[in-house]
Image 1 (spheres, rainbow, N blue to C red):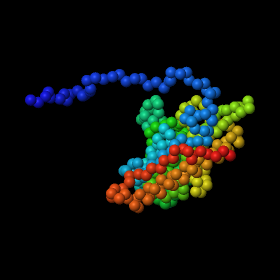
Image 2: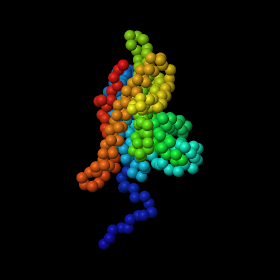
Image 3: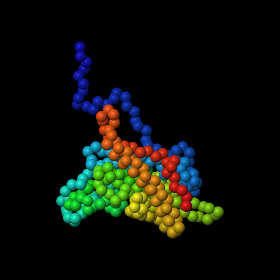
Length: 302
């Protein structure tokens, strides 16, 4: 004899359910005072000049013409490129047009976001576009446009996410076969107050996390760098610091971006090799990953 007919009119929830625990970011121990933070004793164990572990992956979106994923610690950014295709606006018949859309996922931050594009996303869209434009050969696809979509899946530091978005977008453009003058690598840093011999001064700290950016940074800097042509595609700074400190920050960011640029070249070379020589079982690789655990991503002090 068959059992009772299933109830299709109600949600088949389990018979036993539990109330989820509320999210609590506070520990049982009292929080450390702000002055306890030291650039040489960061919460994740890094030194002031160290970057978080970096993961680069191409071919993450099969339906896109080119795509890439960049993981920088807990920050995860994916970029997809579509085109070239006919440009209906046709602002310049002799050159193509690059269109960028930068978005934060609704779940990317601790507090859930809405779907409407915010002013912050519009600002970061312009930053990514300005960083990519010097590297793209627009004359190579006249009367056409290329769409670049950058999505932040998880954000641990706003400026670090934008820098990772620039790196991911440049990788995706190269993965799509768009002609470039050079790859663009994005790196960020911050200025943290520290005391030396009783004097208060600003110390350059590379690749700030979200907590460090919120609690300890008095200013930030982001550099987009093209290593092969030795050109800075973009330099953005917030906060007021001494000229010498700003120069140190720029030098650190350029050195770190050069190392990131080398890893970008490796992942593209590996991706090209996988297309030329597919695996023995006849299947092709959907993507190639290059992982750096951060040990060799420390900037030498000047």
